[in-house]
Length: 258
Image (cartoon, rainbow, N blue to C red; front, side, top):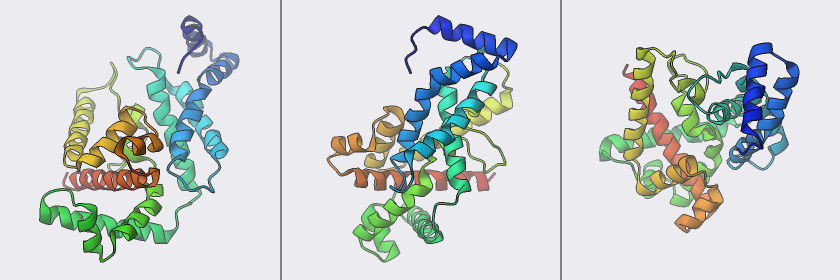
Protein backbone atom coordinates (compact mmCIF):
# COMPACT_ATOMS: atom_id res chain seq x y z
CA UNK A 1 0.00 0.00 0.00
CA UNK A 2 1.33 3.43 -0.94
CA UNK A 3 1.18 6.25 1.54
CA UNK A 4 1.49 9.94 0.71
CA UNK A 5 3.83 10.81 3.57
CA UNK A 6 5.59 8.00 5.39
CA UNK A 7 7.00 10.39 7.95
CA UNK A 8 3.50 11.51 8.81
CA UNK A 9 2.36 7.92 9.24
CA UNK A 10 5.33 7.25 11.51
CA UNK A 11 4.34 10.23 13.63
CA UNK A 12 0.75 8.96 13.76
CA UNK A 13 1.97 5.61 15.08
CA UNK A 14 4.08 7.32 17.70
CA UNK A 15 1.18 9.54 18.76
CA UNK A 16 -1.27 6.64 19.00
CA UNK A 17 1.03 4.27 20.88
CA UNK A 18 2.08 7.04 23.28
CA UNK A 19 -1.24 8.77 23.96
CA UNK A 20 -3.86 6.25 22.73
CA UNK A 21 -5.45 9.18 20.91
CA UNK A 22 -8.70 8.17 19.23
CA UNK A 23 -8.04 10.75 16.52
CA UNK A 24 -4.66 9.22 15.66
CA UNK A 25 -6.24 5.76 15.66
CA UNK A 26 -9.00 6.87 13.28
CA UNK A 27 -6.46 8.41 10.93
CA UNK A 28 -4.45 5.19 10.91
CA UNK A 29 -7.60 3.24 10.09
CA UNK A 30 -8.35 5.54 7.16
CA UNK A 31 -4.74 5.37 5.96
CA UNK A 32 -4.66 1.58 5.91
CA UNK A 33 -8.27 0.97 4.83
CA UNK A 34 -7.23 0.02 1.25
CA UNK A 35 -5.72 -3.12 2.77
CA UNK A 36 -9.20 -4.26 3.79
CA UNK A 37 -10.58 -3.89 0.26
CA UNK A 38 -7.57 -5.75 -1.11
CA UNK A 39 -7.97 -8.71 1.26
CA UNK A 40 -11.76 -8.80 0.92
CA UNK A 41 -11.41 -8.93 -2.85
CA UNK A 42 -9.05 -11.90 -2.71
CA UNK A 43 -11.25 -13.79 -0.25
CA UNK A 44 -14.37 -13.04 -2.31
CA UNK A 45 -12.82 -14.71 -5.37
CA UNK A 46 -13.26 -18.09 -3.68
CA UNK A 47 -16.81 -17.57 -2.41
CA UNK A 48 -20.25 -18.15 -3.94
CA UNK A 49 -22.03 -15.23 -5.54
CA UNK A 50 -24.55 -14.82 -2.74
CA UNK A 51 -21.85 -13.49 -0.37
CA UNK A 52 -21.88 -9.69 -0.47
CA UNK A 53 -18.32 -8.30 -0.87
CA UNK A 54 -19.31 -5.25 1.18
CA UNK A 55 -20.00 -7.56 4.12
CA UNK A 56 -16.46 -8.93 3.82
CA UNK A 57 -15.10 -5.38 3.98
CA UNK A 58 -17.12 -4.76 7.14
CA UNK A 59 -15.75 -7.92 8.74
CA UNK A 60 -12.23 -6.99 7.68
CA UNK A 61 -12.38 -3.55 9.27
CA UNK A 62 -12.54 -5.22 12.68
CA UNK A 63 -9.37 -7.12 11.81
CA UNK A 64 -7.65 -3.89 10.79
CA UNK A 65 -8.64 -2.19 14.05
CA UNK A 66 -7.36 -5.18 16.02
CA UNK A 67 -4.08 -5.07 14.08
CA UNK A 68 -3.61 -1.37 14.78
CA UNK A 69 -4.29 -1.88 18.48
CA UNK A 70 -1.87 -4.79 18.83
CA UNK A 71 0.91 -3.88 16.40
CA UNK A 72 4.27 -2.89 17.82
CA UNK A 73 6.00 -0.39 15.48
CA UNK A 74 9.32 -1.45 16.99
CA UNK A 75 9.00 -4.91 15.48
CA UNK A 76 11.13 -5.62 12.46
CA UNK A 77 8.17 -6.28 10.16
CA UNK A 78 5.96 -4.06 8.03
CA UNK A 79 2.52 -3.26 9.39
CA UNK A 80 0.96 -4.34 6.09
CA UNK A 81 2.37 -7.85 6.51
CA UNK A 82 0.99 -8.09 10.03
CA UNK A 83 -2.39 -6.50 9.23
CA UNK A 84 -3.25 -8.53 6.13
CA UNK A 85 -3.23 -11.76 8.13
CA UNK A 86 -5.44 -10.30 10.88
CA UNK A 87 -7.87 -8.80 8.37
CA UNK A 88 -8.21 -12.11 6.59
CA UNK A 89 -8.57 -13.92 9.90
CA UNK A 90 -11.41 -11.60 10.96
CA UNK A 91 -13.24 -12.20 7.67
CA UNK A 92 -12.84 -15.96 7.89
CA UNK A 93 -13.91 -16.08 11.54
CA UNK A 94 -17.13 -14.23 10.71
CA UNK A 95 -17.87 -16.47 7.72
CA UNK A 96 -17.45 -19.51 9.95
CA UNK A 97 -19.70 -17.98 12.59
CA UNK A 98 -22.60 -17.70 10.15
CA UNK A 99 -22.10 -21.36 9.09
CA UNK A 100 -22.45 -20.76 5.37
CA UNK A 101 -21.15 -24.16 4.17
CA UNK A 102 -23.80 -26.94 3.86
CA UNK A 103 -23.15 -30.26 5.61
CA UNK A 104 -23.34 -32.07 2.27
CA UNK A 105 -20.38 -30.03 1.00
CA UNK A 106 -18.35 -30.85 4.10
CA UNK A 107 -19.17 -34.54 3.62
CA UNK A 108 -17.94 -34.42 0.02
CA UNK A 109 -14.75 -32.71 1.15
CA UNK A 110 -14.11 -35.45 3.71
CA UNK A 111 -14.60 -38.16 1.07
CA UNK A 112 -12.06 -36.49 -1.22
CA UNK A 113 -9.59 -36.08 1.66
CA UNK A 114 -9.88 -39.77 2.57
CA UNK A 115 -9.26 -40.74 -1.06
CA UNK A 116 -6.19 -38.47 -1.21
CA UNK A 117 -4.74 -40.05 1.93
CA UNK A 118 -5.34 -43.58 0.61
CA UNK A 119 -3.82 -42.88 -2.80
CA UNK A 120 -0.79 -41.02 -1.47
CA UNK A 121 0.00 -43.97 0.80
CA UNK A 122 -0.37 -46.35 -2.13
CA UNK A 123 1.33 -44.31 -4.88
CA UNK A 124 3.88 -42.47 -2.70
CA UNK A 125 3.13 -39.29 -4.65
CA UNK A 126 0.37 -36.79 -5.26
CA UNK A 127 -2.53 -38.47 -7.13
CA UNK A 128 -3.72 -37.09 -10.44
CA UNK A 129 -7.30 -35.94 -10.87
CA UNK A 130 -8.03 -39.02 -12.96
CA UNK A 131 -6.67 -41.35 -10.25
CA UNK A 132 -8.58 -39.50 -7.54
CA UNK A 133 -11.81 -39.66 -9.52
CA UNK A 134 -11.36 -43.38 -10.15
CA UNK A 135 -10.81 -43.99 -6.42
CA UNK A 136 -14.05 -42.14 -5.64
CA UNK A 137 -15.92 -43.98 -8.40
CA UNK A 138 -16.84 -40.79 -10.25
CA UNK A 139 -15.82 -39.02 -13.44
CA UNK A 140 -13.09 -36.35 -13.53
CA UNK A 141 -15.81 -33.81 -14.30
CA UNK A 142 -17.74 -34.84 -11.20
CA UNK A 143 -14.54 -34.48 -9.17
CA UNK A 144 -14.08 -31.00 -10.58
CA UNK A 145 -17.62 -30.10 -9.52
CA UNK A 146 -16.91 -31.34 -5.98
CA UNK A 147 -13.69 -29.34 -5.79
CA UNK A 148 -15.56 -26.26 -6.99
CA UNK A 149 -18.09 -26.72 -4.21
CA UNK A 150 -15.55 -27.47 -1.52
CA UNK A 151 -13.30 -24.53 -2.39
CA UNK A 152 -15.42 -22.57 0.08
CA UNK A 153 -13.91 -24.70 2.84
CA UNK A 154 -10.42 -23.62 1.87
CA UNK A 155 -10.65 -19.84 1.82
CA UNK A 156 -8.22 -19.60 4.73
CA UNK A 157 -5.77 -21.64 2.71
CA UNK A 158 -2.08 -21.20 3.48
CA UNK A 159 -2.61 -18.38 5.96
CA UNK A 160 -4.72 -20.73 8.07
CA UNK A 161 -2.26 -23.60 7.72
CA UNK A 162 0.65 -21.50 8.95
CA UNK A 163 -1.42 -20.35 11.91
CA UNK A 164 -2.97 -23.75 12.53
CA UNK A 165 -5.02 -24.14 15.68
CA UNK A 166 -4.51 -27.90 15.75
CA UNK A 167 -2.22 -27.55 18.76
CA UNK A 168 -4.57 -25.26 20.61
CA UNK A 169 -2.97 -22.04 19.42
CA UNK A 170 -4.90 -19.03 18.19
CA UNK A 171 -4.12 -16.00 16.13
CA UNK A 172 -2.98 -15.31 12.60
CA UNK A 173 0.01 -15.59 10.34
CA UNK A 174 1.30 -12.31 11.71
CA UNK A 175 1.53 -13.87 15.16
CA UNK A 176 3.90 -16.52 13.84
CA UNK A 177 6.46 -13.97 12.67
CA UNK A 178 9.24 -13.94 15.28
CA UNK A 179 10.38 -10.65 16.73
CA UNK A 180 13.07 -9.58 19.18
CA UNK A 181 11.00 -10.83 22.13
CA UNK A 182 10.38 -14.29 20.69
CA UNK A 183 12.04 -17.14 22.60
CA UNK A 184 14.17 -19.83 20.94
CA UNK A 185 11.50 -22.52 21.30
CA UNK A 186 8.91 -20.47 19.41
CA UNK A 187 11.45 -19.55 16.75
CA UNK A 188 12.24 -23.25 16.30
CA UNK A 189 8.55 -24.18 16.04
CA UNK A 190 7.89 -21.47 13.46
CA UNK A 191 10.86 -22.56 11.37
CA UNK A 192 9.81 -26.20 11.69
CA UNK A 193 6.31 -25.37 10.41
CA UNK A 194 7.74 -23.49 7.44
CA UNK A 195 10.03 -26.41 6.60
CA UNK A 196 7.17 -28.89 6.82
CA UNK A 197 5.03 -26.71 4.59
CA UNK A 198 7.85 -26.41 2.06
CA UNK A 199 8.27 -30.21 2.03
CA UNK A 200 4.53 -30.67 1.55
CA UNK A 201 4.47 -28.18 -1.33
CA UNK A 202 7.38 -29.95 -3.03
CA UNK A 203 5.33 -33.16 -3.08
CA UNK A 204 2.53 -31.51 -5.06
CA UNK A 205 2.14 -31.72 -8.82
CA UNK A 206 3.66 -29.03 -11.02
CA UNK A 207 0.35 -27.30 -11.67
CA UNK A 208 -0.59 -27.20 -8.00
CA UNK A 209 2.80 -25.72 -7.12
CA UNK A 210 2.50 -23.09 -9.83
CA UNK A 211 -1.00 -22.05 -8.73
CA UNK A 212 0.12 -21.66 -5.12
CA UNK A 213 3.24 -19.71 -6.11
CA UNK A 214 1.36 -17.31 -8.38
CA UNK A 215 -1.54 -16.80 -5.96
CA UNK A 216 0.32 -16.43 -2.68
CA UNK A 217 3.70 -15.06 -3.70
CA UNK A 218 3.01 -13.14 -6.90
CA UNK A 219 -0.51 -11.95 -5.87
CA UNK A 220 -2.05 -13.04 -9.18
CA UNK A 221 -5.83 -13.26 -9.31
CA UNK A 222 -7.42 -16.60 -10.17
CA UNK A 223 -8.36 -15.25 -13.59
CA UNK A 224 -4.76 -14.16 -14.26
CA UNK A 225 -3.46 -17.58 -13.22
CA UNK A 226 -5.94 -19.14 -15.64
CA UNK A 227 -4.46 -17.07 -18.46
CA UNK A 228 -0.95 -18.23 -17.57
CA UNK A 229 -1.97 -21.89 -17.46
CA UNK A 230 -4.37 -21.67 -20.39
CA UNK A 231 -7.36 -22.89 -18.36
CA UNK A 232 -10.54 -21.35 -16.99
CA UNK A 233 -10.76 -19.51 -13.68
CA UNK A 234 -13.03 -22.30 -12.42
CA UNK A 235 -10.33 -24.86 -13.20
CA UNK A 236 -7.75 -22.80 -11.29
CA UNK A 237 -10.11 -22.83 -8.28
CA UNK A 238 -10.28 -26.62 -8.49
CA UNK A 239 -6.50 -26.98 -8.65
CA UNK A 240 -6.09 -24.60 -5.72
CA UNK A 241 -8.67 -26.45 -3.60
CA UNK A 242 -7.03 -29.82 -4.21
CA UNK A 243 -3.59 -28.43 -3.35
CA UNK A 244 -4.78 -26.86 -0.10
CA UNK A 245 -6.53 -30.10 0.90
CA UNK A 246 -3.30 -32.02 0.42
CA UNK A 247 -1.23 -29.52 2.39
CA UNK A 248 -3.68 -29.44 5.27
CA UNK A 249 -3.79 -33.25 5.42
CA UNK A 250 -0.01 -33.52 5.51
CA UNK A 251 0.43 -30.95 8.25
CA UNK A 252 -2.42 -32.39 10.29
CA UNK A 253 -0.82 -35.81 9.94
CA UNK A 254 2.41 -34.39 11.35
CA UNK A 255 0.52 -32.80 14.27
CA UNK A 256 -1.15 -36.12 15.09
CA UNK A 257 2.25 -37.83 15.29
CA UNK A 258 3.61 -35.28 17.78
